[in-house]
Length: 62
Image 1 (tube, helix red, strand yellow):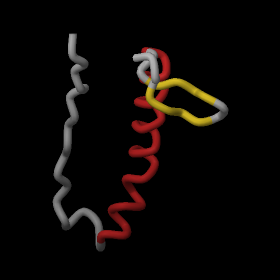
Image 2 (image 1 turned 45 degrees about the horizontal axis):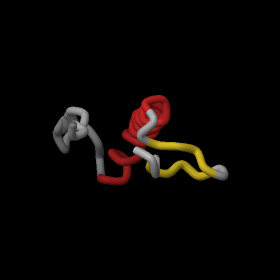
Image 3 (image 1 turned 90 degrees about the vertical axis):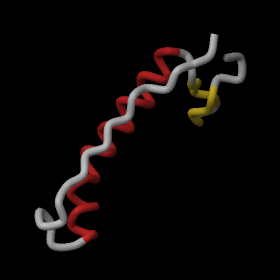
């Protein structure tokens, strides 16, 4: 059975909401970090990733 990737949703934000690219990136940083943390934790719980000597790596047995 092949693994299926989770559905990724991208949202386009109009350019008028932020004055420049740096401001838009700064605004998205906290949400992106939170989503990445949740994804890594879910992959650890499912066994797709493992913590080996303090490093998170793909499960060599999976």
